[in-house]
Image 1 (cartoon, rainbow, N blue to C red):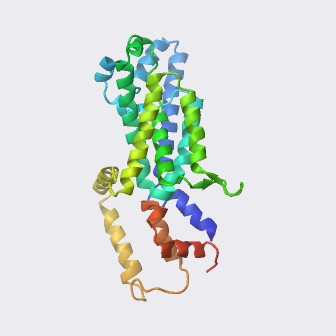
Image 2 (cartoon, rainbow, N blue to C red; image 1 turned 90 degrees about the vertical axis):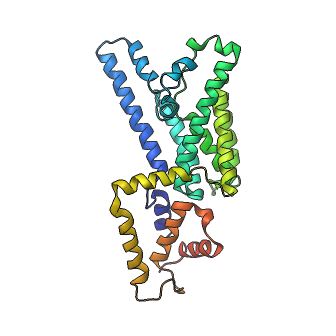
Length: 301
C-alpha cells in the first residue's frame, strides 16, 4: 500500500514538471554536443561553433545581449559540459523533488524560470557596472546552464520547509538546511567571478521571495499555470469535458450519496488525496486528510 502511494506521488497523475525540466535540459545538451561533433568531424573552425553557443547563452557584453534578448530565457536550458549538466540535474532533482512534493508540481517551473531570469539580469548588471569587470568583457565567459535556476529551487525549498529531513534512517534524518548550506558553499566556492556569483545570489533571493510571498497567499506562478492550462485547453478541448464526465461518474452516478464518509479506506479516496498533493502540495492537506493517508499507508484494504 505504501509503495502505491509513493509511486503516484513521484510520477504525478497530471504531469511531473520536474521530470520535464530534466528531460529538456538533457535533450538540449545532447543536441548541442551533436552539433559540436559535426563541426569537429567536418574540420570546421570551432570558432563558428562558439557563435552557435552565443545564440543560446547570455553574453557578458550588454551590447551583444541587446541583439539577442531571448538568451535571457534560453541560457538556463543549455549545457556544454557533461559534469556541469550532471551536477545541476542532480541538485535540481534533489531539491525539486522535495519542493514538488510539498508545494505541488505547478510551483517548480515558475521558481526555475524566475530564478534564471533574475540571475541573468544581475549577471549583466554586475559585469557591466563593476569597472574591473567591464574592462575585460570580451574575455569573460558567457552565462550558460541551469545553475542560477537550481539555486532558486534550493532556497525556495529550504524556505518552505527548513526542518524537512532527508535520509531519515541516519540518526533521525539530516535537516534540509544542512544540505542547502553544503550546496551553497560548493556553488559559490567554485565561482571565482563576481558576475557568476551575483547571478547565484540574486537567484537565491528570488527563490526565498517566491516562497515568502506564497505563504502570504501571493502565488507568483499562478499566471504561468493559468497560461499553460489555457494553451492546453486550446489543443485538448476534450480534456476538461472528460474530467467533468469523470467527476460525474465518480460522485453523482455512484450508488452512495456524494461525499458520504465511510469508515473503511478506499482507493478512490486515496487517489483524490494524491491528486491534491500533486497539484497543491502535501501542505494543502487538512489534518484529517493527512491522518487518512498515514492510516492508508499502514493498512491493507
